[in-house]
Image (cartoon, one colour):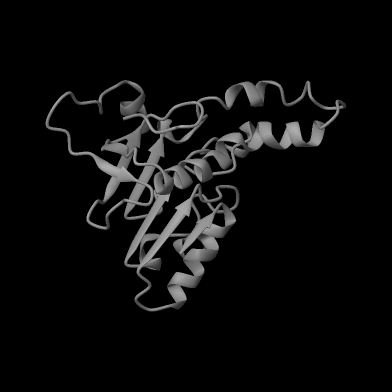
Length: 185
């Protein structure tokens, strides 16, 4: 099963009701009202034999974040640290200046939801493209941002997206581009 935002948690409910559910992919699971809550009310690793999550918008709701940073799967992927996806910041910066202009509602929605919706583009690209989203294991977003997870040789990459494997567990980080194609080989 695959679910985006609230749909990720709904997939978790469904998976927990189906013994032996094989796999759930949570695409930027919703954060508001779910982050740091009891696993019974949100996606968690017991909902399927393999639960993976891709986090792209883990900012607090007060900063227009709709996803979560909390680990919820056997494998959790954090493209660009799981927040503020490349190419989305200019949309957020222009959110309030767009109010009152033609297409202001669309501009507002695209601005505040850009990082939250980016996960859909990344996952679709992982299916359609031959480029592989290579992610590295890393202890934290801070270590990732400081370059402590980069390696030059003998890297143990994990594939993010459709090609991810249940044998790969942990927290994984990677960089993506700011526009299609997002994959950086």
